[in-house]
Each structure stands twice: as C-alpha cells, then as structure tokens.
Image (cartoon, rainbow over all chains, first blue to last red; front, side):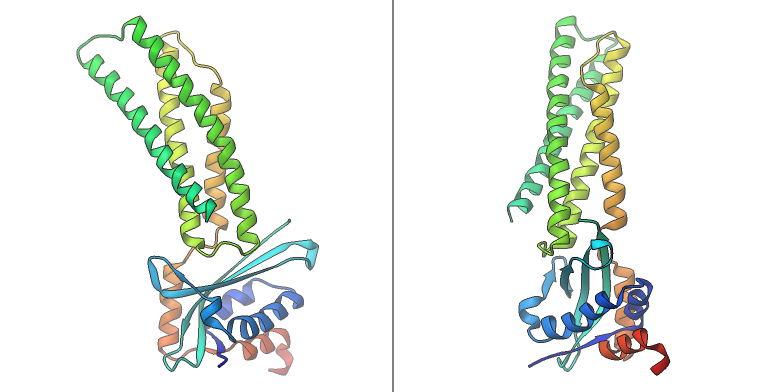
Length: 96
Length: 178
C-alpha cells in the first residue's frame, strides 16, 4: 500500500522559503512519495523522547555549486492511515 | 553506533574532570577559610595535577574536533537516524568543556597571581574559543526539533488544513497555472 504525502501550510511556507532549485524541488517531489510513501515503516525513524513524531531524511549531492543537501521531515500518519502528513522540515546545505 | 558510544563516553569523561576541579576549588576554599595558605609542597603537587588536566583537555579538544567533523559528515550523508539526540550529545560535550576550561582558567589565574604558571595556557584559550564557536554553530545550524512549529503545524493538521505535496509543488513551480 502506498501513502499519499500531505503538507500543512506551515511546512509549505518553510519549503517555499528555502528557494530551492528545480532539481532539488524535483528530488522532494519524487523522493517523498516514491521512497517514503511506498514503504514508510522501513523509512521512518521514531524520535526518542518525542514518540508522537517520526522522522524521514535524505541527502543529495551535486547541483548548484556542488553543495551537499540534507532534508529532514517530521511526519505523522493521518487518522485513517492512508496518508503521511509532514508537520515540520529542515534543510541544510554545505560545501563538501 | 560507535560514534554514539564515543559521545556518551566523552560526556562522562568531562563530568569526571569537572568533579576533579570542583574538589580542588573546595580544598582551596576550605584552606582559605581557616586563614591559611597551601604549603609549597601542595602547591607544586596541585600545579602538576592541573598541568595534567590541561594537557588532557587539549588532547580531548583534538578528539572533539574530529568528532564534530565526523558527525557533520555523517549528518550530511544521512547516516544519523537519531538527529536530536546526536546534536544534544555534541552540545553537552561542548558546554561541559567550555565550563571545565573556564574553571581551569580561574584556577590558573589563582596560581599565576602567586607566581606559578602552568604551560599551554594560550592553547587552552584557543580551544575554549573553538568550543564556543562550535556550540553557537551547532545551535544555529543543526536540524533541531522545533516543538513550537510542530505544535502549530499539528493544530493545522487537526483542523484539516493540509494538501497534497504534488499540488503544492505544482503551484510553487508553475504559479501561473494554479
């Protein structure tokens, strides 16, 4: 069973504020549904001391100025367990 | 896993050093409260112990520098699956060492004012400066859990305010079509 990926307005605002390139937005567009949404049990980690939230992260290199990028998403299941809702996210980029 | 274990060991080591320094301070305060001063023999003994701690702190500083760069590399390679705890451990190590070095520097001043000066004080100052910078950078850049943000976002979720990732990205990438 695959899960749809949903975002709250707070997460939308954050992602929009990152001003990511098309390539990185496409990474998010495909990674979240294909990697996380297809098998969340294997991809999500519980956050110690915060069992209400789970974490999914991925990193990607190359792209603009050859920077390394890390994306972290804090996730919950929807009540009917058909979707994964992203509640918060982070993005770090550094030169390798 | 090995790095996580190393982090816990470093935390416990720094607590042990802190205790050692507190014991010296207590001994010094007790001696002074009796209006006495340390005998020369005890001063030299303490000075030698302090030098050992300074040397050890500088060795650990090098290890922590390596630990930080290894940790950052692992983070950027998505190899850390306990991001919050890992960041907390690094923060504690940096804070403990800032505190230890501050206490050491106070002790060094006390000894210097009596004409005794340990070696490698400048190196210790530089190490303390680095720990402060590392801590600041860690607090600013590490992907910490933001409980306020999560609470706010969860409230939106509870109200049914969320939409599909694809719809959001379509709108973001092609605003004219939305």
